[in-house]
Length: 211
Image 1: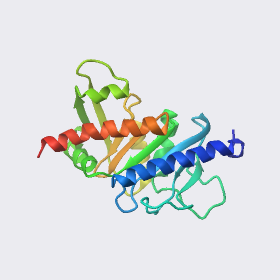
Image 2: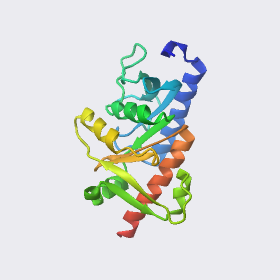
Image 3: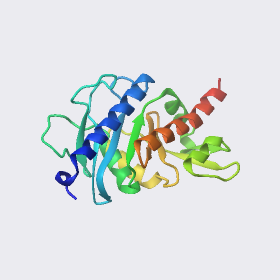
Image 4: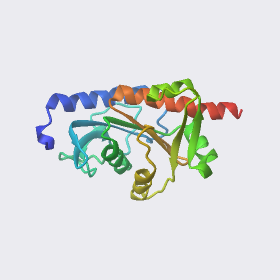
């Protein structure tokens, strides 16, 4: 399938879903400055061919404008004529989509993400033990243990991509960039948003316990 074959209503639905999530996260002050990026995949998927809508670079996400989003291909290149630039971290989205085939990816910067990623940097993962909300990741063992991977954050985004490739755990729909923020993903925006809230809860436990 090429981009022109994707139904207009599917494209409009993706943009509406992104707009709703952007407002929700903005209301929670999760977009410091112009930080953070959100995307929703549209159309059919293969690892070699897919498309998604993503937040445009350099935009104030507390405001709604006609220039908030654009569609890109698996290489992160715009699918339509536009003066907009995709988020600087679009290549991270393309790699997560390629590896997982998920339907949506959300990335924000919070204080807790930054603090916890530094605390556990030498371990390269955040251990989470026996937390009830782990069940939301479809992990049902008693006192289950998971590890949320942490990868280095580089100013040169293409250097981050192979780190994602090496560390992404298909059983854990999230990954932390050191002193930066968390990426989380799911089949749909609603499931992705729920996964993000569960992951954030687990990370917040550590910072609350340190006070």
